Length: 385
Image: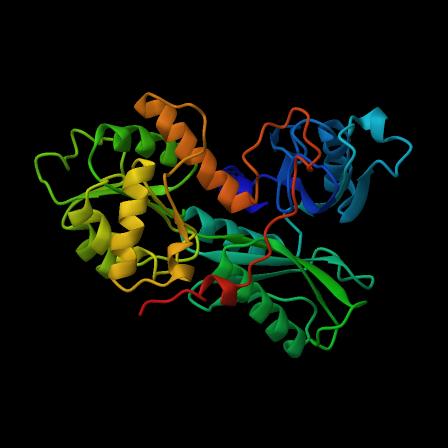
C-alpha cells in the first residue's frame, strides 16, 4: 500500500474510511509485484492497481465488502482458479491479495497512518503486516522507520516484535519489499506467521558525469525511471542549471573528487559520458570500488579497450573491471541523444531486473521474472578501499 501513500495520506487527513487490497505474493507471470495496492473509500472512489487491470473489478468488490463488515480477508486469483478467466487474470499467473479495512475504529489505523506520513515526508520506512498466521493475527501491523523508531505491534509479544522489526529493518536497508516467515516466539521457522514487509526509501541516485548533449537526454530518462539525478562536470561553462533544468543537482567539480565525497549505495547508477581519459580513469577507478548497482561508460570499442588498459595500469583487478558496462547501453541502433538515452535506460532496467535485452517476440524466457533477492549484506559487499 505504500506505493499509493500520497493519495492514502490525503484520505487519512480528510478522515475518510477505506479498504485497501495489497498484493501479498505472485507466482508465474503476473503484471504487478508484492506491495502493489488498490484502495476503495466509502464513496466508491478507487485509486491504485493490483494487476494492471486483470482482476481490478473483483478486488474492488472485496474492498467494498471489507469496508462494510470490517473484516480483513485474503483471496487468491490465478490459473488454479476455475473463475480466473471470468475475473480477467488471463496471463497465466497467480496473485494473492490481502484486503484490509481502514475504518475510524480500525485498531491498525494509527500505525498505517504513521507509515503513510513517514513515506510522504520522504523518510525511509518499512511496514510489516501479518498476511498469514493464526486467527486474530491477520492484518496486524508494525512500522519501522529508518532512524530505528517504530510503532504498532504483531500481538503483544515483545520477542516477536523485536524479530519482526529486525527483519523489516534488513529489508528497508536493502530497499526491498518481500515476505518473511516467523514463529510466534520470534524464531525463524516455517509454519508461524508470514509478514509482508513493504519498504519505502528515498529515490535511487543516478549520477551522470559529463555535461554533454547526451547527458541532457539521459537526465530526462533517469527522472522518468524515478531516480534522483545529479549531473557533474568540471567545466562551469557546460555544467549549468540552464542546460539541465530537469536535473535535481548540477555540480561543478572534478568527477572523481565529487564521487569520492558523495554517498552511494547498492541502488546507485553511475553513468560516465565524458569518454576522455583524464576524466574517465580517475573517476572509474573510484566508481568500480564503490557500492553501486550499475557503472557504465560511453565510448567506442577502441576507447573501451584503451580505457580498460589504463584502468588495469591504475591497479584495478579483473573482477573490478568486470563491473564496468562499456560501451554503455543496449544495441538499439541508437543515433540521437534521445535514442542513446533510451538504450542506456534499457540496460539499467535490464541489469536491475535480470533481463536479457532480447526481443520478447519468439522468446521462451518468462516476461515477469522473480525479483532479484539481494540481501542487505550483498548490497554492501563492494566497499570503498
